[in-house]
Figure 1 (tube, one colour):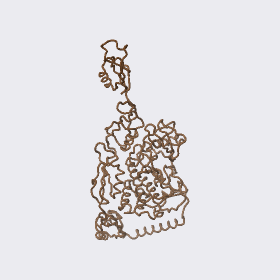
Figure 2: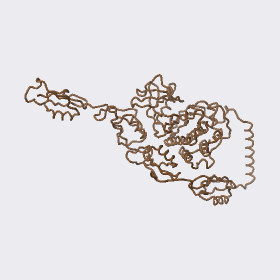
Figure 3: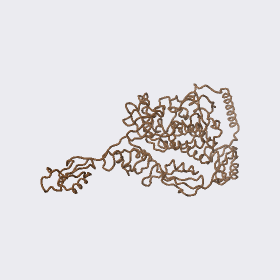
Figure 4: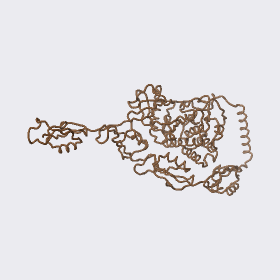
Length: 628
């Protein structure tokens, strides 16, 4: 970070101190929230874009979209606004680094670390997708890693509710980052959560291969390769990549969305299986679709900025043809083969089909006999570790029920038998969900979330309420531990922040997935010191939801009270009267003779330092004189 020369204050509250990064739409600064005395990240739209209504609207929607997303792997948005024609949003300041910086200079990550990072990103995306939002710009620069290795996704600047019909991107162009485009994004087609799955697949590819799958001389060239280029297997660039992880990447990068993982949850589940050494779904069948065109390495596109590029529509005419001679030969061969196949079909009606039988759960001998009786043969046999008895068929490709040609060979996956070991289930109750999942994964157990609408008082929406099996129970590696958590959208009791500093109160709100409202009020208090939280709106104990903005009521110090008349009272009576009003009896001295005119005044108060009926601060002292 570099210090700024002009520490401007936005909206009389946010003072910029350091420049963090420059993006495609905005500058990101480290700033100080002068009201709550905390460091924040301030994202400021470029001045030349502030005059563009479309960009301003996209920027406004970024704030609204992100503010509605409350998840441990998503950077929360605290506030947004406008100051003298400059638009900004205020986000949590993440002390850490971006994945882009980690991958600088073609660095590679270990397969296990890359899978862990991608699984956390998929966790964030699945939450956003359930909320009806597609990120549309998943890239290393938008993936932040904290000092304790927690991953947070930021910059929902291109995200929009799927149901919204008006498109803010310029006609004939599409917004995003070309290196991480999905094919449907590059073509300007409608996108859904599977587009983010593709982009995350590109990021995962880059983490383990040291480079993205497609590079080119321009964003347009890279976009064209996403649409029609064949994905080079990542093990071409790093032979040490495990085959199962390569299978996951290739399924995520399928050109056809229908052949990818159908949700970020599915991708995350396979990444978790890989991390646990379990068979991955992607390796059990034909996952990825490869385009017809081969790809060769060219100069890498510089930068990783979100950009608008022309959408791909119809055959490309601005990309130089490659390998045209071999392409012509291949085309002729394909045409001849197709013609031969059609002729055989028309002249010989002997080809018959059958339905793939279900042999899952059977032993290999029985399964083989069943397949042969259906006119099929066993081709490749894959052996994997599992809890099923040795020799049990776990899956087949094609799957049961598929109509296939007789004589076709079938790939079967067979169990190697139980290869687990005992493990003591750790206690993760009360832990944040992400921490609990990591703890279980490190113990070689599989976490499974189960939501509930009801929870004990004081339950944090981001923490584990209970677990099954309980802590201390002996389980086997690979067993599932069910974590009971509060369901999204459920209400819970507002925590009591009375007497806390605004910084500590903000931390508690963040832990409870609540945000701080942009405004606060002051109110006098005779019990809470000035500057501390006196109350909240909604009040402590009220039912709130994750993502809700909480307004602070800040103590302005002691309240004003009315000074009672204690002249003519004895010292004990005066002390009682003053204490009843929240005042203190101060110095007691002898009155002047001129103030004591009759013998009956002896022992009684003649004067008081604060006039009766006047106002004074609570706990103020009142000095008195007493007649001798």
